[in-house]
Image (cartoon, rainbow, N blue to C red; front, side):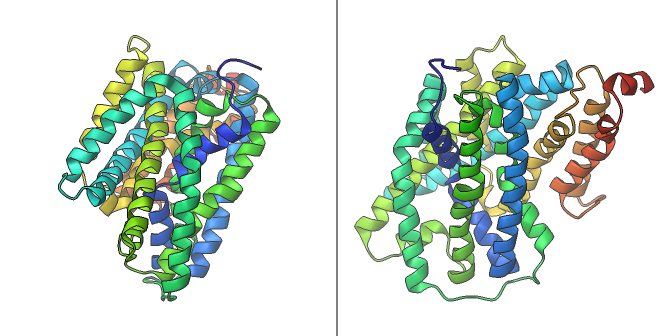
Length: 394
């Protein structure tokens, strides 16, 4: 399929890695290593990203089959109400990540211009992002392609600091592989579910699957590995700390600027996905207004201390998305657009996830996993009987 919007292997991969290379993703790797130890973090990194890749392969196959956005895919597999829950499930994490990244960009700008308050820096970045997204997928791809060399610069510098100043530290908690793996999965579960938004523009299924393999088996693990190594060898330091306390002012300025631009790129991806979801949910709202609305909500949320409570924020943002992902996997070979069972399963899964988040009830101790399992359990009859039969039973 050759259209003006068709994206190359490099462009598709750059968009995803541009979104992945950000402080919160590295911080998750850092927190995992600090909490559970280097060995546990490395195993969790491999297991978590393997699960993400296998899930992305299935959703990527669906994307190439139907050539539609995530919400249209939800409508095909789950019916008209599926688009509604799909919109909610994507809006929540994308707007949340947009807010987290705005907070980080504000910190980067404050490092470069100390006299400029963090909130003002975040506001300016948010306005700039809203303007840049007007060019759509092409604009996002251009930003991502330009910023990839900056990813290499920042990564090389971080690894240099780890090698020259690192000292292996003992973990703060006993090794626990399951929660560590769930944390790794939580970082990118929304990106996996939202694969159709970008990969519908892939020229072929081979290109799409190769790009997904590069992202989830190589690129994302390497980015998270930076955080894991920082957590194990440079305890108590954030990525910005490593750069700004290096003693080389021009290097610190250059890399901080690179990180800020990378954050800008990441947020262009988040904002584009959120705007697409809102516009698909309410077609009467134009794409421009969708961008304005989602961007404004993200600006307001960026005032909350999301970076300081990253693990909790990730769990809250990923509950609805995890439930939707479970439905996509369940209905992969047997769409159920006429059955109410997937919708019931999604609401039950989200409810269980929220209860787990509030420590009211839990199946596994992890809200994301609880939501996924509860949804899959309720929807599991679709694996064994026809959707029409389930519809009659209900």
